[in-house]
Length: 301
Image (tube, rainbow, N blue to C red):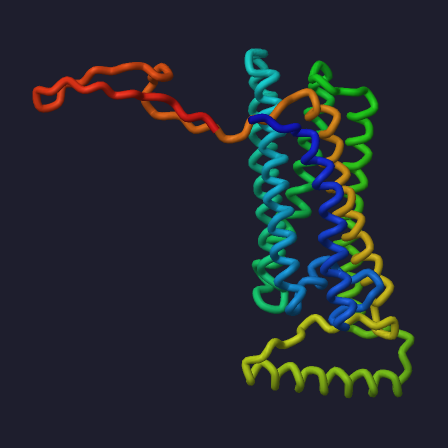
């Protein structure tokens, strides 16, 4: 049984924003995040949306793995007898990096920052940084594979543009996040003494509440909702907005495989007996001195 491989890139393009907006809608409706550009992972921090987020993003990671593997087989098949060893090695590296990036998405989805922050940050690094490296590798390969069926001159330039946007968005996410954290730690320089005193009192109360929850074994909210009055809010919004851009660009990049995937068919799993026999072959066996006939056939799914 065969299927059309070009369907998968389209599914990835559609599923990512749909999955993100599902958990975003749940989190906003329950008041767990602000409606204005929260981090994508913040929409899956608290239950019940954390369960939905883990399932949907885990599914997206699984689909990404399939797409990465099909791309690997796609390139390997066409250039199998070309003798281009560097291209084959690069293709293997792309496969490994793509798998690691998908693993990062899975870690982010299932290890919330409020529960296991180091694993969550590791997953985010693997997902975004690994995804950018994967885009660069595929873009370079595109410039080297002009004879690949489905290749277009505009396609390699479009992938290059997407990769550059992906890199710039990634850098802005990190830079603006650090600026937001720095401003939040030091406080705004133009804040009045009265506002500072009020902020300190609120911080103390929040810290006390968090400690009480932790002591009681409850879920402690270590990522409070950002408010426009908070120091570093503009940097926070810039960082979260770039993260959404980063995710959308990744999905668009996968979708560019459509033009090349449509020239290949993907066969589903086939099951055979380990021994090679012809269908309906008659075999005579002698068991305990008695001749018996055994009918053997193969099974193909």
